[in-house]
Image (cartoon, rainbow, N blue to C red; front, top):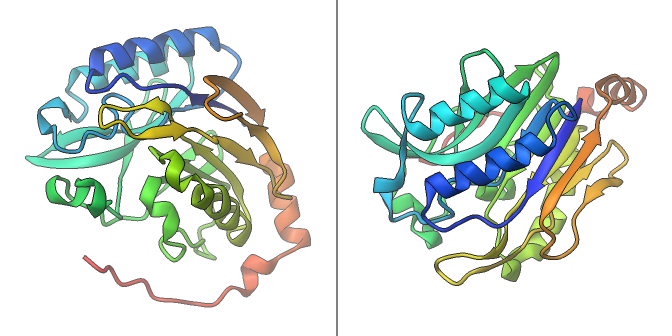
Length: 261
């Protein structure tokens, strides 16, 4: 599975500008990747107190543009954006697939210190998406800090954990540690895509987007503040063989997850 990591600055509170930037970047990699991953809230930046910028899920201009790009460039687009759905506001993780209905995961752990919990509705479902025979678990930024929420189900394994984020430089050391930890404990590939630059609140972001293989080698990584696209080729067959040779996942403890909301 060829996955493109897109790390770049987001234009603050400007959905039209950001959808245009994404189209340019996807056009440049057409035919080279099967999945493209963009950062958290890529249409606006992390401006949680601006609900008027939210897209209406599936029928809004941003949703329609994402579906058009998925169809045009024949790849799945994964990220998150601010949406309204049935009168509620979500930080919605999405996967827009070519010629198919989009799927979504709503961010479960809302970042109260950033104002998110005041405006957004938390998601309640842990979802696994199947795309071209690969099982994908999507998480959004703050979700990364909660290992039980991302724990593999022994009866429904996922192959790739994808985390999209607006994770600031001042706390990047936690991102650098938590992402490989989640990949290791869940016996899966780990991909994290963050933004770079300075947002409208003057928060600084230095990126550190990365992809880890089964041995926690960083098969794709970005320098501080690097803006660009990197493509990794992940062998799902190799991953599943690795799990059979080292089947720790079969010995995991049973647990019951109870929501704190």
